[in-house]
Each structure stands twice: as C-alpha cells, then as structure tokens.
Length: 354
Image 1 (cartoon, rainbow, N blue to C red):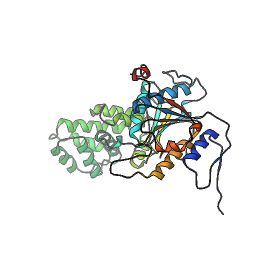
Image 2 (cartoon, rainbow, N blue to C red):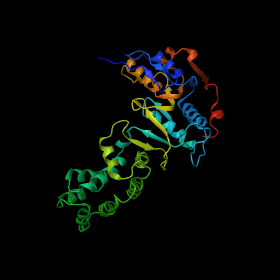
Image 3 (spheres, one colour):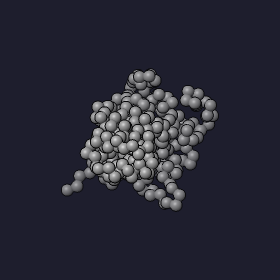
Image 4 (cartoon, rainbow, N blue to C red):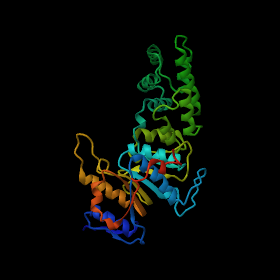
C-alpha cells in the first residue's frame, strides 16, 4: 500500500504556493499548515557582486542589525536560522567575501576545490604520514610534496622502515649527506608528531603551514577554516579522505563561531530546513545551469530550484538578474514581491563594503 505525504508544516502558504508553480511533486501539491507569512521576494541585481552585497545587507536586516564584533542577535532571528543557497561552489567565493566585509560569520558546506591545491595536499600528506611513517608510498608522496631534493628522497626511502615518527626523525638526523631542507623537515616530523594530538587542529595546521612556508598559498585558508570545526585532528583527516559534498564544513574568517549563516549548494541542502533562505543566482546560465558543449537537464534543474524554495520556512528571498531564469516565468507575478536593484549605481550600494 502506498502512502502519499502532502501535508507541510514547515513552510508558509506563500512559499508553498510559489513552489507548487515550479514543480508539482509526484504525490500532488503540498498542503500548507503553517501560519501566513511574507510574500516571496525577488531582488533583481545588475551583477553577482551587487547580488552578494544585497545578500549581506538582507542578512543584516533579518537580524535587526548585528554587532560586528560579537555577532549577537538583536532581531527575531539568529545567524543559525539563515541559509544562503546557490547552484555552484564558485558562487560561494564572492558571497563569502561580501559577508566577510560586513563582519557576518558563516560556515560553508561542501568539499569544493581547495582540497586539490598542492599546498593543502602537502599539509594533509604530512599529518597522514605521522600516523604511519613506515608506509613507503605515503613517505615518498610526502617527501616529493615537500619539494625536497630528489637525491635526499631516495636516501630517506632507502632507510629501514621506521616504526613511528620519532624513529623516522632520528634516522634522518643521523645522516650527514642530507641537505639542510631535509634535516629541517625531519625536525618538523619530530615536533609535530609529538603535539599532533595535544593541539587544536586549526592551530596545529596553521603553525605547520607557517613553518613549511605555505601560509597564504592557495586553499590553505580554506583548510584552516575547516579545521576550526574539529576538536581533534583524526576526524578532520578522516572526513577529508572520504568526505562528499555536504559532509565537509569550513568557517569563514579565522574564528569559530557557534552561530553562523550557512552557505551551501542546492544539492547539499536536500532534506534540510531554515527559517530564512536566500537563493542566489536565479538567472539563466546558473539556474538552469548551462555549460559549454553540454545540454542542461532542465527537469533536474527544475527539481533543484524546487528544493531551494522548499528549504525556507518563514522567509524566502530570490536573487536574480539578466538573463532572468526561465523558471521564474512559472511563478505568477502576484506571488512575488519584486524589487529592482539594477537601477542603483555601484557607489550607492557599496560604501560600507568597498
């Protein structure tokens, strides 16, 4: 016997009315049981930059204004009540920059591309090696990512397999034919091996990045932001190794906040809910997503748009512009409260940010 779930107690009737025009679920339209709420808002912007600034401003308004040092809630909602959703990870870079400028704490969901950075791979390889220094493949990988002389790499690999990081460091330090760079690397093995379980991951990785001259390299700040969310190193390394989109989180800025706005892709948002949702990039090319040489799967893109709309409980704000997403044509104008920001000059909207 098949049961169809159509009752919705999360979203307001206004949000569900818009969602039902975009996509009618297989089981039929959802029935709203929530209280009446605000109209769905559509903010038309000139550019992704103007959109990012508008997102930051709308979050500030939702909070009733925030103290930039403490980010304490002064309005009806808290930072944890707000999510910014987007189609691609690339959109998060500009949005997070605008939130940084306004002092709004955030956390980003999703692996993104930063883990493929050579600097990030070098840091992660080093700390994975400390748990198993006798693995020759892992040792070779770590030595090459540290860009040590090739002759030194062959010498170190020829040493008897070390049982632990201390043995590895001692074996290297006894060699007189190794370069100063390799000897310094051995000292780091000994030092960080001893404190890897005694120091907070973010502080540990930041210190190693500084010692290895990797501070500021591509992806390192993102890795440090992710490390802020972990109390110990082992779970971080495990998640990095096997994490999928939506499993990995990183913080904006260099401080961990217990309350923060959530930034995530539409894919990662499935099954979640937030009182306030700001949906970025509601324009053709992004929603539906179009890539050169590939035909867009319009039905899948439509489902993702529906997912984004129905994550919202109390307030939904759509951000778009030219060319406008074809999906918006399915929502009657009377269901949208439209604000056109495209007529504003940049200097009129950016003074507090840039």
